Length: 184
Image (cartoon, rainbow, N blue to C red; front, side):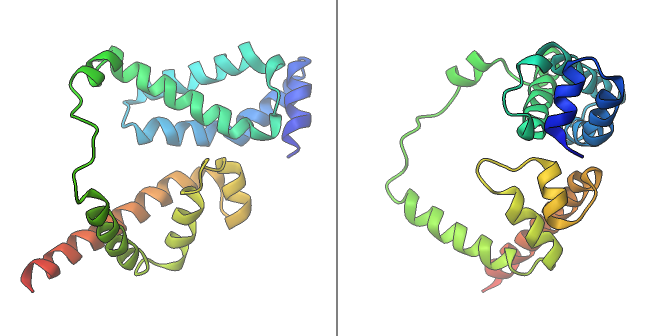
């Protein structure tokens, strides 16, 4: 799918182009909403609000090739707004007021380095597919799911669920590694 051409056509009112964009990215938006553990109604609201924001800004999208990232960011903001309204997240001012002193501890860098080295050793024990996916998704800035799908030859809608399973495996390996280190 030629996303820039579809964005331009949808901005001109082409319903087929709009439908193609929805087909391409709707799975991504739903996977983001599900990652925030929203209920069905809230997830649907977050996805719908994201599409509405796109309609409102479609003629102002300057980098249509990065539409997946724009949609993902907008969906995350919508999910966070829903969680704040439901009282499941503190307001930003509350987070700042309650935050601890940001100064690192004296041996902070040493501990972080050791932790990172241990994590990478455990990471290497993951299956190839998990390592590939997680490495790609760790890029800064993170790539759009559409780009990840092309790079790794997987459906866009499966990236989120596979990512969750891979992170679960990594977490289990880390926990197992902690148990082993605790015995020695």
